[in-house]
Length: 113
Length: 116
Image (cartoon, rainbow over all chains, first blue to last red; front, top):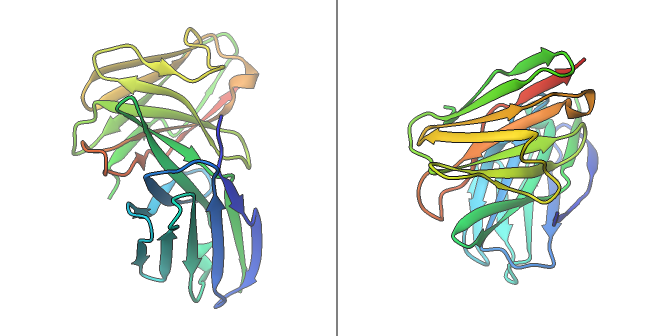
């Protein structure tokens, strides 16, 4: 099925560093979502973006919905050990009244203390 | 707190048996729920859309007779993996959203299925 292009695929950083990841798509989405998944668990919603150009923060996390509606980025400032995990972007489309999520490949974040 | 509950979290079964996984929306009614499958170190792939009171909609390549979906109430959808084989071993995750197109999807904690 359709996928978003998410990069980078993995990141190895030092604690305290800032992190940036992004997703691009050839299709327009009306909503962009960012999730974090810990091992053996389901994804947890971090930020939801509903309008092109929207910039939204959730604590140390900031995400933006690109003006073209084909991209989004997620920034994490001053990383801490609990930020370790896999981050997924997701674009939501409404098809015949039903919503579907298309996921990026994920960004695996590893933090060295 | 969690808004979508999934059970069991882990199950081990023998080849040829069937396994049922439950997905519940905890404090809202969900006319639509979604079932995903995730292989190790890969992204989530949508298997099917579960519709309350009607047949599920399956994605291309997903066998509907293999993965039976029942959405009998507004808070419960079940996925039954029938005649399981080792290649069905995977992480299965359900999701649901509150009513309204702007409500984001929330996910259950997933079920790790191992078929021996």
